[in-house]
Length: 436
Picture (cartoon, rainbow, N blue to C red):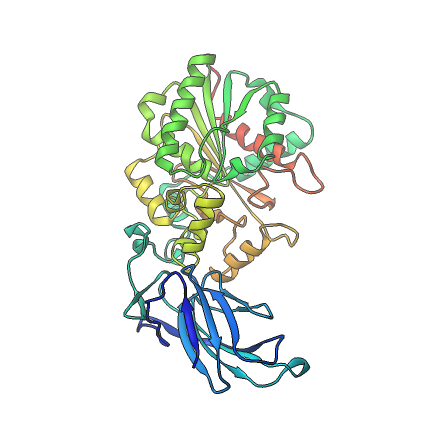
């Protein structure tokens, strides 16, 4: 008889089947984990998607046992005399364990037949059967829809608003900058506050080259390194507004907010939520690769089987707040912009987007994933070009291959690329912000 043990939950009854809302995947994996001994019993352990460690013991040659359980990260790691893993296409598995009489070097082992399953992102058990249920995440997770339904909504809103495309103007400025003309050096009347993106304060070199370059032009520039980039947009908006007011009081200069990635969303929210307090103190906003309309990766993460795994990574490894990912979903972004419209009449804003198809880019796997999943969608590996603008913003699209890290880190073969691209975007914004 097969023994199945879960030390942390010894009284639970386990089922061989899933609930009705699970479907059988297309692939079946049939492998064997061989033992170093020719004797019974044989033991195999593994961890499921709910972090429970299972121990399966085969005691007789006619033993057979089937169990259904959730899977995290699309793989199961088997541990016994021989360690291995099974990759699956789904967030659940139905596995049958049985005895294999002979194998490598006349040994024997446990045969593992795995069927991929697809179902609810987070599993709960009811009388031993896996069903859809509540978990420890926010209830609004259930309201997160497929990104397919929302990608590009903000771009369509731009068209309705007749917004300005300044891509050609941006590239003219960049050409001058690369040729050695740095007119930005004349704008010492402002303070340049660079607002970092999600988790970017965990990267030591993040925006270092850009800040150094701006200071080299004689500008008062700094990175808001004390910002908790993993916090919610609402929390960061308040912190940015407070920082901008403080800088204005200290220097007597207006502040230009330069937000990268989620930092652009945070910067826009700071102005939209605190327009009265910031009028005359903040000169405008420059957004670099910001998911202002939302990010497909946020919807994919929070609406998929990776949710539990990603939550642990964010909270425990990067010390982030899941609200940060929630706030980048299309639903949250649309709600934010509807409740707090950007005050274009008082605060000029430029939004700059990029895209990558470069094989050597570290973002290429994600960029390729989004192209395949969303019918050729152009992204920088994190943010879709059609999601990086606001209705009413002056938009620029960098036409060279440039991934999501391009605005923050030096590009291979061109150590000044990030600095020059950011400088051009800032200078484009300043064309609508005359000196006082």
